[in-house]
Image 1: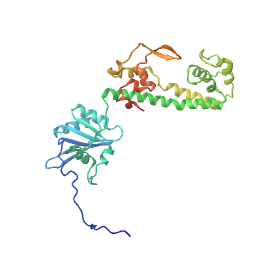
Image 2: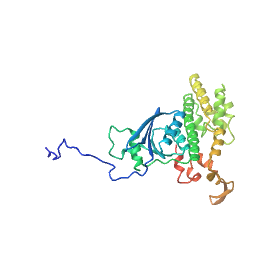
Image 3: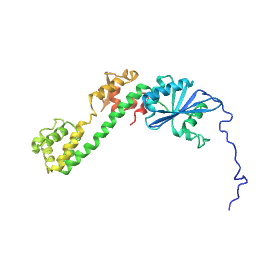
Image 4: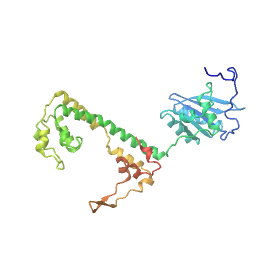
Length: 314
């Protein structure tokens, strides 16, 4: 049995975690952002704190900004989950407040919190002493561009399950279209699938839809298109094709919006000049790819500065 500690179990010590520290931001506020309400804490008189609750409607956010102005607040630190902090920060920054987004991990690293202290009070205390490190937030134009890039990536992800269901329905009918075409959603593949959905069953007629760039001949494509036309699989194929064509992943409006939101510093890099490329010992001129094409093709490092390219990861 180990030795008992000499310290009495009934003894207590007074912990002063901020002893010797000075407030570097006396006009600081702390906000705990939730889905339905905001808990706001501001410094009061005689080393006290004032806590007030606000709603999340736009009118309530403007009332919050006016109340913070009357309290003489200059800097605001907030903890939030999800994207609830975005409209709050937009309203507060429009009123001239310096907003800092704080992660929960950075708050947990600091000891000394008591259970009877609200989150907003603890955030306000730490922020007034300068003990919180705010999260990185890109500029407004990069946020808008990142939103559309991620939106387009998610649209493409939504198309993938429908393509897999189409391929599964074809294979179950022994239509080996994927063996003769590298991409069943290409020009030839979609033309053949649309003809199948339109009740065309003749494999030789379907093979005539072959594009001239296909490596396989019409005879081989016709052999691959000979199978069992089961009605349940045709229904699944028809439904999957309808969902696939309704997803606007390559919509011109998305591309035009991305081009309009491209930062001016990046847009200036666009060049239509030909760059030389060494291919099999010969110099072949290759047109330069514009920054938007590089951004959407995944080569983000070449389209954006190294310091911000990682913001567009999906």
